[in-house]
Image (cartoon, rainbow, N blue to C red; front, top):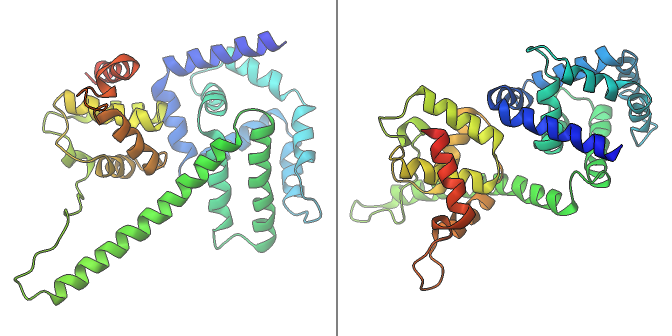
Length: 307
């Protein structure tokens, strides 16, 4: 049975590799602030397991329970898994099943679920009972991901640091901007601002004139299907080596990507660390990690994809 499951996961991986645009569109929808993607997934589950809808409604109004085993039991005791396999194998082009399964097994699905839960918790329209239940659900998702082996405690610690870095970076930027403004007001005209000016160019301004909509589409596909720290670094280096990107630091490039595509990227701090690791010379050798081995192969693969 285990072999069959692994074989099925391999089929999902093959679909993912062959359909980057379809998968990218699904991921984008799952990360929208209007919850459209989650609504689609919920309606799919309800279509395959009709009694799940009433069970969810009942659970979300029950403040006597601290887990979600009743909902999980309904799904595990149904034909949901079999129906999903059948839909995957006999799907039409409009079905979200292949992309959803790829997202669940290979994407940042658990992190996205947690972000969705946190977003609803902080929504002013969410009442207190639902906030409490949603907080339990977030914890349940994290514990379930660890117990199933899909995530580790280290993964979630990294995610926590990523969330912290977002808020910290925002505080630092706003503080620096205020400090600069205050300093300017005190200047008599003889003093100059210290430090480098903030690079606020958007993605189209960072890309050289040769860039077009096709390139922008390829960049979008790449950051959706390869969203890890080193992948973003590979992308920047590939664009630079292809003569498509103006000189810039990794942080403005990261921000421009996130803002242009309205996508939550992995934490900036991790991307900065990866950039430093790949681009700095090793001791006195003059050699950089980006110039050899698998790192160079990955960058060249990005360049081929973009060309």
